[in-house]
Amino acid sequence: MDKTAACRVLLVDDHPLFRRGLAQLLEDSPHFTVVQELENGNHLLDALHSQQPQLLLLDLNMPQQSGLELLQLVRERQFPVRIVVITASEDDDDLFRALAMGADGFLMKDTAPAEMLESLQRAMTGKIALNPDSVDRLAQSLRETATTNSQNPALSSTGNHPTSALSPQPYTPDLTARERQTLLLIAQGLNNKLIARKLGISDGTVKVYVKSLLRKLDLHSRLELAAWVHKHPDATSLEL
Image 1 (cartoon, one colour):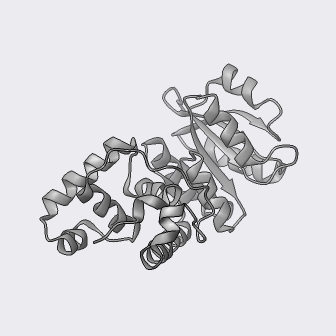
Image 2 (cartoon, rainbow, N blue to C red; image 1 turned 60 degrees about the vertical axis):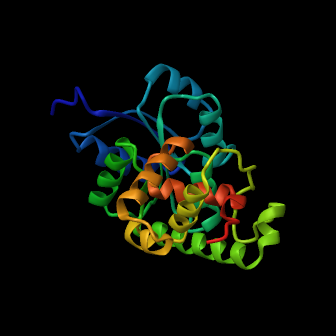
């Protein structure tokens, strides 16, 4: 099998059986090639330098350094690699923190093989790789957060954010009032048609606002916009 153009993958997981199984799944695909496997993060930076992978797969719960600690380390060093967390954890905090720290995906270890490959390919195209259940969990939490903030404006203005696992960040981007309103409605799970109806504008205008938000916030998808609101709760303290 010619893998000249295959995505180079570095895999870090302390469970040998799962690690070998995932590596075999990737090797059987024409789209991926595993350049190295690690059982912990001790030699991760060396491997990133020597192997120059395009995709890093991180287990979440590992001894010595957790997947989140390694994720933060890699992002701080600004390695040009896409990172997907693969875990058995169903904790919402883990999901939100991973996305907030720059993960390009969060997949469960019991994901079906075909779905796993499809999701990882999606991550390599600049999209967020999530299982349907994780999407539902994220959307539900965002809706609850938006509702809480709208009912308790003081929480947004002081930075308190009881339903979010993420540390509040100062709101700094220069967004227009309409862009902020659009951002809030995206966080509530509304599609463009419903946003247009809510704001009394056309679908085309909403698309312009969404593109502007992605550009100004340096994001790539609506899901990333919603996750951004989780990091910046003060961005949802809007009057509609």
